[in-house]
Image (cartoon, rainbow, N blue to C red; front, side, top):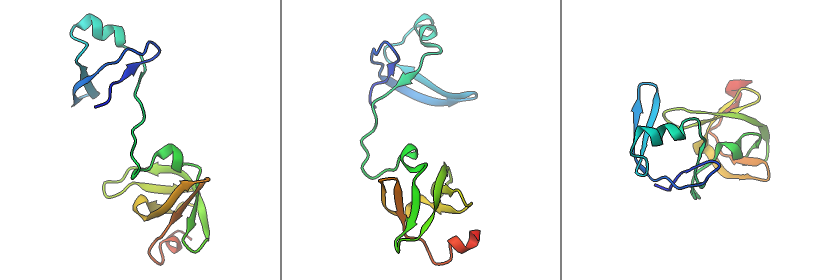
Length: 125
């Protein structure tokens, strides 16, 4: 696990483990061993260096991108990415839902190219 830094001081904290608690995600750091140290971090924003994942897509890169089919037809703009157990879905401004597994190129220059099964976009017209 990469270290996390509480903003703005930038001291590194190494994650020991994390668990899902009743009210959210609970995390323990190796460098934080007392209640007082923990309370000193309350309300602080933790940051981490971005992951280098060449095979993944980042939501902030997809939202706002124009979705184009492989034959060059513009199908809409990504308004959001909806979490879905099988595959996350691109939510387009016209209402269409496109599984991210259909992305074949991009995001680049504000465009995402997709190859979808015949009839997918006709479901939303």
